[in-house]
Image (cartoon, rainbow, N blue to C red; front, side, top):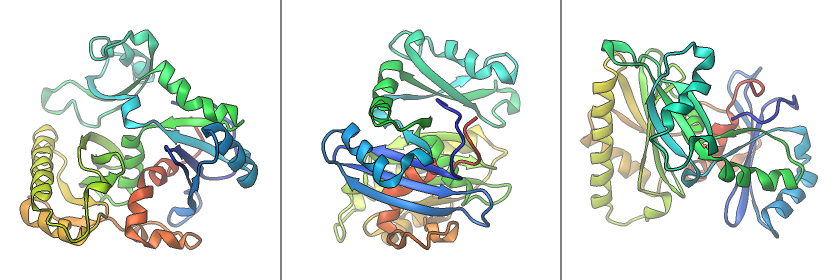
Length: 309
């Protein structure tokens, strides 16, 4: 959902508001052999959201950046719908009317965006789109602190598409990738190939649910079951896309979780390590895998190519 179109310094800055802090990440993509994370920090809130953002704008000169933020999972719905039978240039607008019976408020009161699912029309199935619907009032509430702080948001994104950006870096050419990322709100599983998102779903297990040294067998069983069901469903839906592996973000005892999943799933499993695909010489704290997990979504949101379109 693009709001403005001003060109600023290269790369994107993602700002995420939390109950007690503001997270920021600046990533430079263009002109680099590998994407470079130039900034990845968390700042404690002082006063209101607007007060904190106003202070950070002055301290960090945020007016110089192309800025984006992420909607929170509870502020939007993520839906799969049949693609409207209209030219591709009109599909985003037309998909709004496909949501009339899928959301519990008037579609006229919704901000809607959508991306086409590649290959969904194979085997005679109708083409599909992945749609995002959010109440206009919730989008306005998300934007208001930035407006109050005189920070122009050029894009509002959602975690599913931010994670797609990140998954692209780990894909193998011609193969699909399953990426499972844990954060404070839960776990997000995405399936992508060729830089395109095919499916996304949430699993109710958060970073805080893992305790180092604890017996996690029951939780591991539940995660493995959810993942295998998702892998099987994806295989039935997209037989032309072979998932090469599952990559999971770090948790406490992450090596043990990866080993357990590798022994119980039908695909190889590896732990996510940003050092394999990105550079961050000025952000040494990202060498800590758990800090990486806390920052993956905002890094993915800042992994946009070019200016807002």
